Image 1 (cartoon, rainbow, N blue to C red):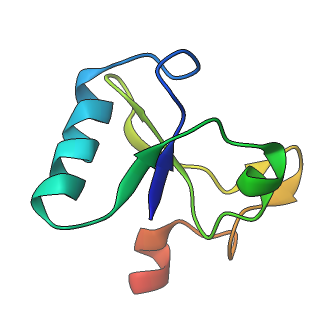
Image 2 (image 1 turned 180 degrees about the vertical axis):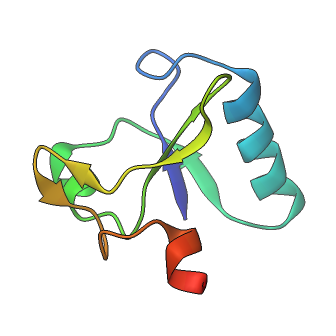
Image 3 (image 1 turned 60 degrees about the vertical axis):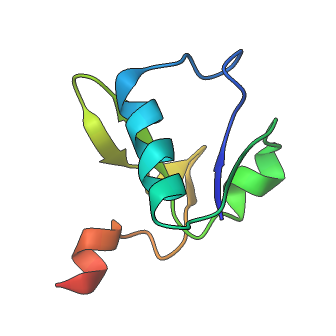
Length: 77
């Protein structure tokens, strides 16, 4: 399940919209919701979207490791 904040906390952008379109086209469930810090800390993996940064892995939040602490691409290599 891909979770993203509502656009009040996460501005609408081309990259974000593209990720959600890819999810929809490939049957990957996704949902917009207000995320709690607990949900963030418990995420299996996390990434940010942005025009300049495209997709950027997030491996730590507030000093807490997200998932394995490795970007998904590193785990597949």
